[in-house]
Length: 143
Image (tube, rainbow, N blue to C red; front, side):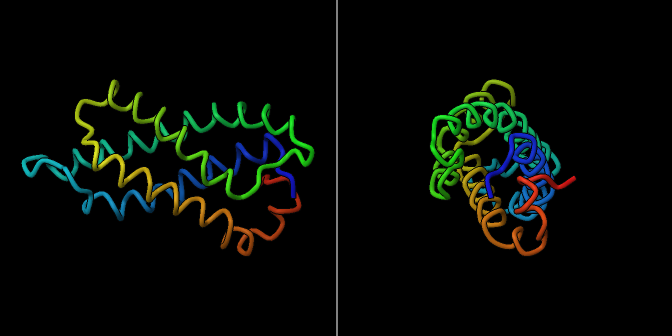
């Protein structure tokens, strides 16, 4: 399957909101580097703001990736490229988050972003292909 740009956007919105949201809800209380005096509700507010940044920045990155994919013969990424793109996306999200959000501990960000990225990547490359059988044949579109 070669995902279309619209399919990639739909998939990204779905996996970041649903899978990323569930994972963020689970991992937030376990993040390192959070000051003990910070209320758990405030920590959740920070991690969900970071997740929102991942979504917004990721939608912008999709247009960049689409342009780069047009230079490839297959018009698609190898699976490893999909994993490695987390590096540049993480750097951009970190730069924006550290300027936009008051307190973002580096260790908490690193654990949250990395684990969320890995969970989303694993979901898209595994169970999603089973749960949403038609997704593969519709260019990555869910709707």
